Image (cartoon, rainbow, N blue to C red; front, side, top):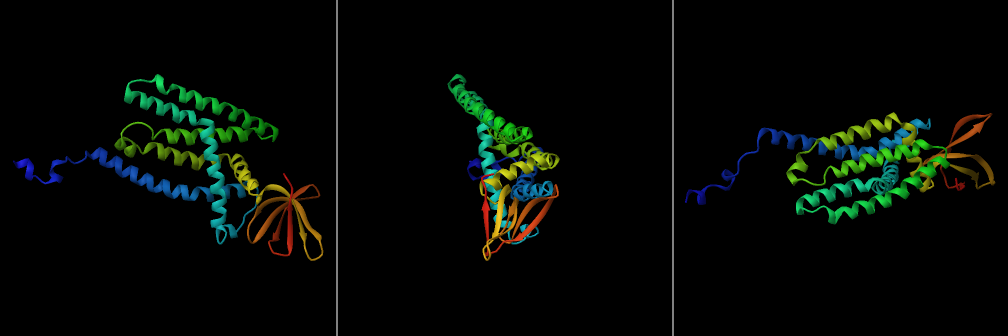
Length: 260
């Protein structure tokens, strides 16, 4: 009879101090990771500018949203590529987790092989493209980033919801690695950002010719590092030396971009 009138909150035992601490740590890491993910596009873009030896002041003000959107699109593409390259890790862990649940592993083994077969030609394609561009580090950098992403996603597969929520270490490691690895290898990071800029034809050192519409005279010819609503940052070769030219982006100029 007493159990019928006992308040519901008295029936539940309080969480052990260790679990409470784990949940607090996890909440803090989730908060920090959310802030980090929002800052990551800006971080990659700043590393790109540092590696290419220029800086766009307006990028940090009125053009920040557009640039963030651009880099986010590039990072989203990189995440998709990551799943192609190392998605079999997540599939393998999912198959193991499901096999433990049902007590049978063979039924899900084929999924891992399918993901592995998809990954193999992607590795070959990326490796060949990196070699043809004389940038082998691009392959290793992309592969390293892809492996980190897939390993991080795999950490949330399997186990109970409480175990996944209290496991703060994978997120902390992911933040730490994605903070220091791009900084230590700014050249590879810049190459990855460059790919995104080239896709949208707004930078990435694509060859351009800028012409003034009023007299059809060429203003500058060089490689476009970045185009913002306010300026165009172009590198030109002067007496064998690399120089930066900033051209005001206005309606009285025409920008012809080659397929570079």
